Figure 1 (cartoon, rainbow, N blue to C red):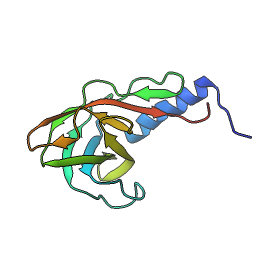
Figure 2: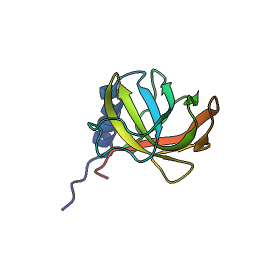
Figure 3: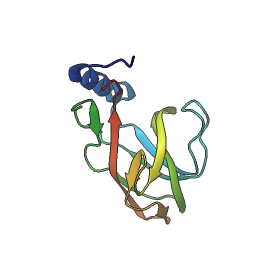
Length: 130
């Protein structure tokens, strides 16, 4: 049997996700596939790095959190975005895929040139147990 959680419990757990990572983490977007785990060393070329807003995710609703504020920065290198890592200091707390659609983070353009502005258009975190 699959465990199911109430919406208030799912919301509390999802909100704790942001609290645990902390305010103003760094979002790194890199080329290639994500490493095997968050504990694995960085891989690919760092193409875009940005400090996220102090309150970077909205309040959970139905166990889902979405990006809050504007997430954009200029590319520091040219290449094709493939994965991201959210870090507090040097610690990776989350990683996933980057694409123009059907990925963990959706961007306006995956093919970036040096100095090109990159905007994250969608990012959600969904707490399991629905």
